[in-house]
Image 1 (cartoon, rainbow, N blue to C red):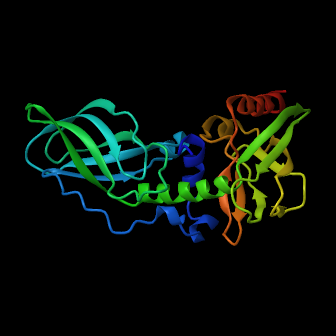
Image 2 (cartoon, rainbow, N blue to C red):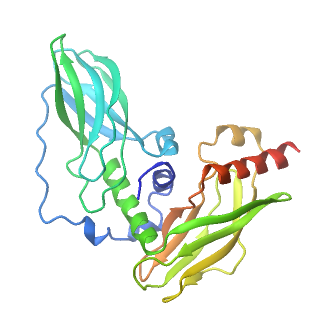
Image 3 (cartoon, one colour):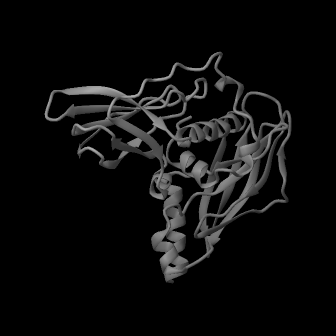
Length: 282
């Protein structure tokens, strides 16, 4: 599964929710601690995320500080971690005088749950005081990418057991209706849906009693869903970065509930955007 916009956004949005009690998938275990990457003289870096990074989904910041006495220039940044598939280098130009600190925007790729995220490093192209360019790997302090990796792997474990889709969305007056569908994947554990949470601007409701169960041996579970505007406040509509993130709480077997975002495509999001326009401006 790709650790992209929808999945990563809900992971950080709901960090610390019920999924915090779930153990990482067994495939994420490693037999021995990974070798540490040595520090780079004159550089210190940590990872973190702005709210805008969470909204984008696969974005994070490399907060880099020149701790030495020689200026340097960074011309590219890329995450280097065995727990994420490689994504293209981001090119930039940022000068670092001694003591200066800047945030460099980077991306993480699809999660690799068979590997630990450690060691988490930033691969940088650097020229020192006008000298030739060189590549360095700077260790990234901070728990952010480890947390993202763990949460995305929890989501992947659930969606491997029962892939989630949204079907048949259509406008119906002041609502949009359709079905949330869970399809049986490998394994026979019961899969339980306990709640569907709203977004910032849209209510979402499943029109069946909850919890609802995809029983062992059943091929699919279909849950009618209704969306309606939760607010028409202009500020909320203009400022929200995640208008169409709807966490579905799903548990597999004896596991704790894991928030899985409804996977909406561009056409489905357009229907929901039209709903907001129709009701709030009509």
